[in-house]
Image (cartoon, rainbow, N blue to C red; front, side, top):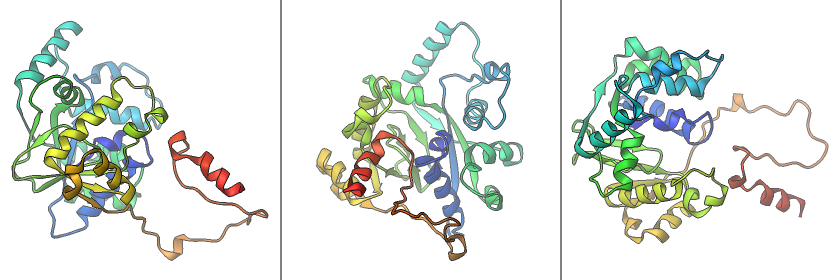
Length: 287
């Protein structure tokens, strides 16, 4: 099973890995692949969104709307009542079952919002080979239990052999299920100065990572990421492995530049943001 929550976060980087992982696993006929969709919000805001005028190609907004539709129905009462109900639900609700999604009804929505930003149209038929599930468990409930001295929320994954998360997630799974964290980096901890100023982001990442060290295996993208994890949590050494990100390109896709550059140049592929350290790359190139 692959958790697809990360696929809602724009197009590049970790969201692409989530989409490609689900597709690649589905190509192995020896595996029965499934995908999990968690709701983003404490309560559904589908009604609120439906009153807005949708912008064309608003992929992120559409994806959040889909997460709402597949999550809770709109709860009655005032905002204060709904917040109180959410807290009570977080305290007393322990087990969260996996709820099947009918592919015939939601295949178009799921493809367009979760997979189309990365996968070509020729891959669309893989949804017919993947079991789709949702859970009423929300990010807000996960964080409520993480920040307060409450037992972690639990997903009932009784029939699932392993589940892959693209980030540390403080949630328990059934005892027969292996929980795998695809650890890309520890930037939210080690270079928090390059991250958006989100309240509690550093504490939440550290808390989730500490819980995952107790019950998860780590598939790190590089030796340096593994070394950083082990430096913080030495007990994770026996649970951490390195599986680099891979790119498959056929020779037909590699073509010479139409207008070759006259001056020396370098090519860097990645999102343009401070944590990618392009400044150091440019300085090294100049020198």
